[in-house]
Image (cartoon, rainbow, N blue to C red; front, side, top):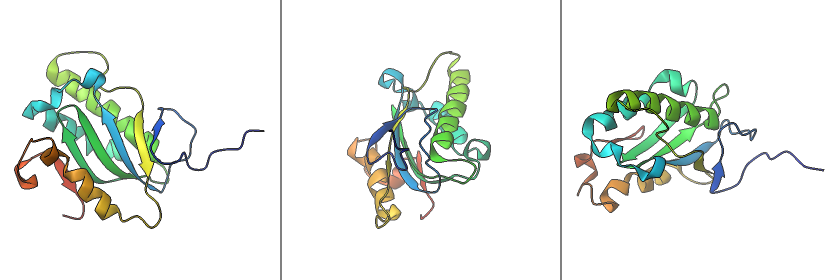
Length: 158
C-alpha cells in the first residue's frame, strides 16, 4: 500500500502538477533555462523576468523571500502559502516569466527546463543563512566583484 508523501525530501526534482503538498514551508528552489540558454545576460530580458517573478498575481499568498537571477538560471527562496503552495507559485512564476520573456525576444516555445529542484529547509535551518548562500552566486560566477554591483537579486532581510 502506497503512503502519501508529506514532504518530498531534500534536493528532489519536483515535476509541475505533482500532488505533493508543499504549502507553508520555506524552500530553496532552482530552475534552469531550456538548454541552459543564457537569455538573462541581456539586461532588458532579465528585468522582464524579474518583473514577472515579483508579480503578486504569480505569487498569490506565497512569499518570495530571496532570489537571484543568473544568465541561464534562477534561484528562489520561497515560502509556500495556504492558497498558493510552493509548487504552484514556482509553476506560475515560470509561466509568467516565459510569456513575458518570449514577447520581449519575439520568440515562442519553452523558456525553462521542465520541473525544478527544490529543497525544504529544516525547521532549525536559518532562512537568512540560506539566502546569504544563494546571493553569492553572481560573485562565484564572476558576474560582479560585489553583490551591490549586480542588479538581479533581492532579499526581504536586506
